[in-house]
Length: 125
Image 1 (cartoon, rainbow, N blue to C red):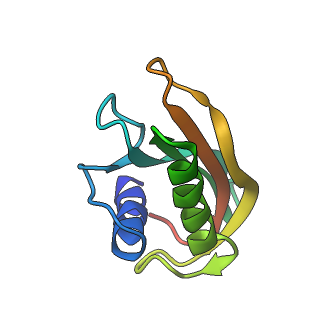
Image 2 (tube, rainbow, N blue to C red):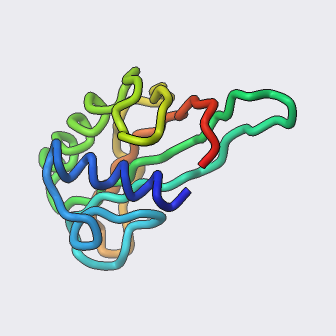
């Protein structure tokens, strides 16, 4: 699963901007840097006997400025929403569950944005 999430972060870096482990992360937002993005698996459904898997993903972005965060999350959302096979080696479809928006503020009063997707696939990885 970590390879899949890392591939998503790399795709964001190549198409929107950023570098994995510098301002793009897998699993959680780190304490620093203040402006960064993370992709996390947040659940899903994988039923025995059903070849289709549903992987719930949440994209997080923390930003000092409202406009910068909104722009970044809108770009991420448009990159993945209703897209098929955009991550090389991981066939499937990204289904948007939620428009990007402000989720709240962190302990330093930085704005945290989220966008939620389900990745639908029959692949095992």
